Length: 274
Image (cartoon, rainbow, N blue to C red; front, side, top):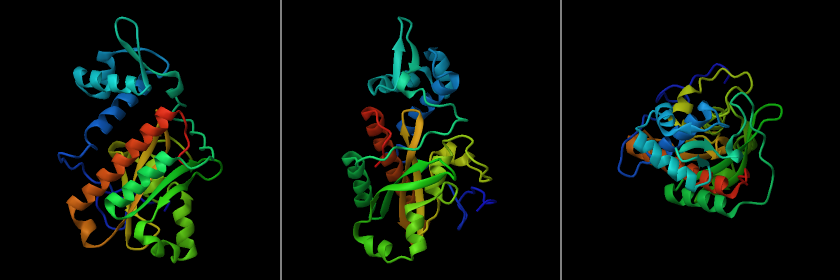
């Protein structure tokens, strides 16, 4: 795994989908623009106030578009508006650590009904296997499963070889798409050689899963401006996954779910995904 590269649409390698424009596809819309605004505020200085024109330029958005998303982030409590000249800043709780500082591992806690409901909805919406992972950054950076929804596929998972089952529950961040979705948002963590630039740019990763004949599609979960975990879908391989429309539908479903869970975590002020 150490010398693997993230490549586009190569069977057996980690891959990323090119954006697919559809009327219901929010991956190129609100989620991407929201993240562009948040990243702009972080790069400009998370503890400082910035005028709209500067935020818009840094985010690569028209001023009117940046203003619309800033107002939405203000309503969510992630951004504050300061002074009569409308300067913007991240709220104190969302300054987060510098990109070179690993996020702290999520604390164990009781299951979140909101997160559970979203992952069950994802499984039902797609008919595939769905998982939520959190990062564990002490020692070898790992992704650890906190929620899972098997649907009618529980026999496939529970009768799988023990090594496969263990890999579904926990694995190094560079082992598969679920970990790469987290790793791409952490900055420099560990000595890995996998190219994660495309994962960071596109906001999701696709690659082989621990279960044979299934492809893993994953997107990061955010707590404000800090990564809190990932949502992963294990889609049945074969002819359906070779169809661009099917792959795009699954990517949209995963990214929608990750965005909704991110909203739950940020609004509730907790970094728990379990």
